[in-house]
Image (cartoon, rainbow, N blue to C red; front, top):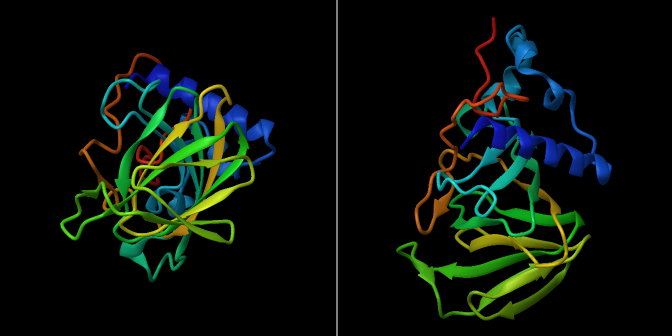
Length: 228
């Protein structure tokens, strides 16, 4: 993925947050130059991978398959004594025409909330014990206090203000309903570990290889330098 694509995606997400009055913590505004001089007081940002996260899932077509995210708070399951938070919060952004890949989580459960913009479509499947996709069984859906069932592969629509609960081992992907415009999503979940807790089907990458065609606007959550 080109650095220029990442920079553009960062600015789009930043503008969407401003439009819907989702104010970001100070570390989201640090420049790459500032990060070179930031000490151990911000180790939590480094160790819990807080901050910006732009991915094309290694597929090289971000405008078609990609996701823009900010992790605002998180714990670290490998360092529970130091970071005991058992919860996480993210903001996520999808443009119209863009999708995010099908996956489930072994550990975390999460609520996905439409914070503003268009309508998001979340396709849901159960999984088999061997972790393959169950294309046949009905899926139990929990949305804002309502429980109901839908056929496997249904795209559940979330309009602004609506949310869905995603359970462990539930396959799900994301798309924007055509004609409704870009979407700002919230995610509230258990402690998040994107290095070990995503089961993509079919397999894809999580963090992109970057072609440095211009200087970075912000550092991504896996790019922070060590503290001085």
